[in-house]
Length: 445
Image (tube, rainbow, N blue to C red):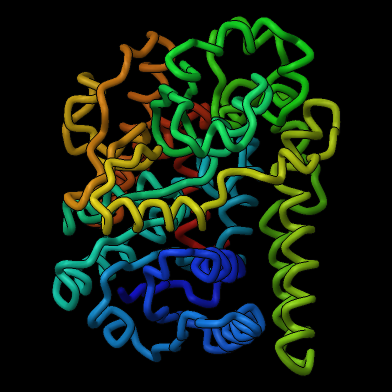
């Protein structure tokens, strides 16, 4: 089975390869990397060479020079591209901040700007997949994942599936806080109800062998304080909600506090990553062999994970992530589990970004939602869920309207749709502000 990774020079690609090397099923026979940056993909290929050292049967790696070469013959296509690089991300963050609204790469105005830039490229990829590898499954991790998956599904239908590691990370941390060990989770005896959009969802039920655990967890202040989302949102608010929100909902529920921590920041997340990863690739090019490059990559990766969502933590007391917070769902493990479930026709349950169908009746059937799915050889089928509360549904409907307007804007070059996408976002409080953000982005100011 051939796996093609688009964005093959991405910093986290070695995590995918490491998961493949640890896969007892040896399900992938070849990994093909493609990236528009030849220097970055060469460095990442060196890291993979080091990872393969000493392995009895490492998965062969090949670098493809063109998109078409990379896609030809692929069984799975993993898309993790960053259109515009970290320089584009910096602009997505700084332009909204200059207008007094949140700048973040997947949420709010920054997410809309990133989507407008990325969707045309993602659609081109979808069209080439349909032409060159029509039987392939596309696993999309390109952000904003829900918006990009929705655009690609217009070409690929159900053969594109979006993934994110935030939901399964939340479930794992909640299960641990409720007293369950990793073995219980891996055994399949833990059940959960999770529904929403990408970076906007709620864990509303957590069971073990059919027994509901979430109310007891929500009533235990010390247990809530033992994991990331509990500290991020606080026991009182979680008890008021009666659910555990995805960490990205902190931008919505604590907008003022997060914006205050970002407004006068000397360095946005994009600027941090631009300096950190730019420095990594520069040093790696002169490091002198796979061992040195790998050691440098590991140090840089740990620093990246430790500083994740630092501004949100600063807004809630400035606490540091511990080892359990750092052990999220792992998008590499999510991708591998998805591939296994399709190949084995296993019926595995995973939280994925897929077409809604009838899961949330108030949304269109082709709207991409993030929810619990059953995965077989036919793809991912969203499972029925309990009705959404009015506050949950209202937020989903508004953000979905934003996502769909952004897809229209990007595919038709429709400025009106782009303005609608920005102005209707709940984190953008004025159509005039939205218009100025759009103008500055268009002028590359």
